[in-house]
Amino acid sequence: MSSHKLGCLPGRQGWGSQMAPLPGAELVQTPLQLYRYLLRCCRQLPTKGIQEHYKHAVRQSFRVHSDEDNPERILQIIKRAIEDADWIMNKYKKQN
Image (cartoon, rainbow, N blue to C red; front, side, top):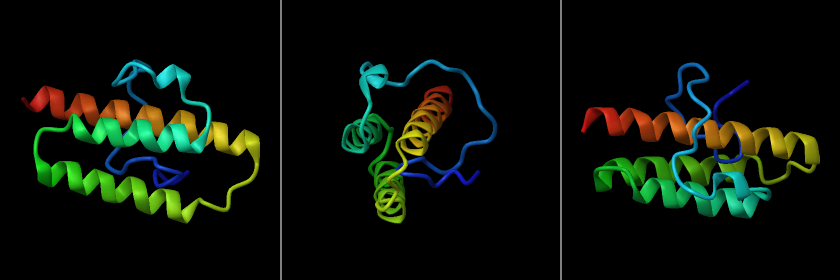
């Protein structure tokens, strides 16, 4: 499975913890909610350059998967995107 699915963020190695990076992850149920959630996560990253990198990755992933219409697949993508965001947020938290 590619990490570039409907907003999944690149750079993830393994599954990591199940803890969400920002409050509200458990409320994400639609692609639009996921998109907004991931952009909020990007704003928490340490530098403008890193923020822009991940915002670009989120936008690209949404474009690539904009035609996905299988509800089960969409929920799977949402779950993976939140896990990936968690991994990335923890990665930068540990560096600071």
